[in-house]
Image (tube, rainbow, N blue to C red):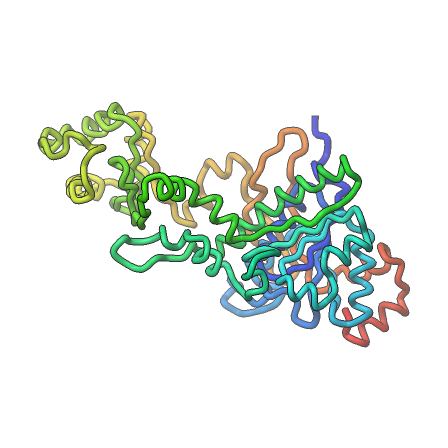
Length: 404
């Protein structure tokens, strides 16, 4: 039986910029939280100035990134550097369960918007702070970005061709990963509040998140044996095949966990003569050079077949390999369609967009599609008048002085 949404009744303020805070609160909004996004006038969130834009025409209400990150939210504006703007923010904090922000600690201190200050205003507030290096340590106040977290965490060192320079994680991955961890940690803090009645600060470092997610075995190997990890490029050197190789119309991911699957693959290929070569008998013990030799023996067979053809061959022969899918293929993939993964939203300025939907499926309290992202300051009157009790005269004064 549908019990409504899991986070219905939870009021969340988002006082952030760009990706990490916005992605955290988007996840919460998907499951029923009321999210009020606070932007600084006159330009608003930095994401508004990032594309993609329809027909490559920059427009603050048509950024694909902004529309993705901020669907399902109410939008207000205020300037926290003015006394009136700060007072409005504190009034909103009094009405909130959660505040999510991603400003550097020294910025929050300059605005006197630390957890100590906001927790005194609302002792039950959960304040989630997402930064590259967290709220402590010598790097806490450094200006940093997703690429910084990728480098500082050691993740970049493990990505790319072993003979070339390291590569960063694509698409601001650190900020998205930090936002997802922040959403989970925020709910842990809400659960703790059920017991204690008091809020707390949730301290998220995107570099820590990447470090924890990507490197545990590297540390264990290094501490225990002195093994120094390296970049593996398009393969995992531990077993064969564990590799990405080209086919007729793209790339395919090949991974075999046991000899039975490898034998079935050799049968599919027609049991080529090279399969009996003593140099390739023990596929797990081969050095890197032998693995590259085997790649070159397999590539001609793959090059004659499309991803769709290979998928059918491997599925029928119980070989768990999968094509490397491109963006257009993902949009049409029957698996995601069957799971109702995509959301279709109609924005008054940007038109229709297809956006990724909720990443988690709950059987009793499911997520629902989100409303379009708000225009800049679209909900000022609704929030400030209905929630805080301001009058039309108050609103006119705020507009006139550019505080909102």
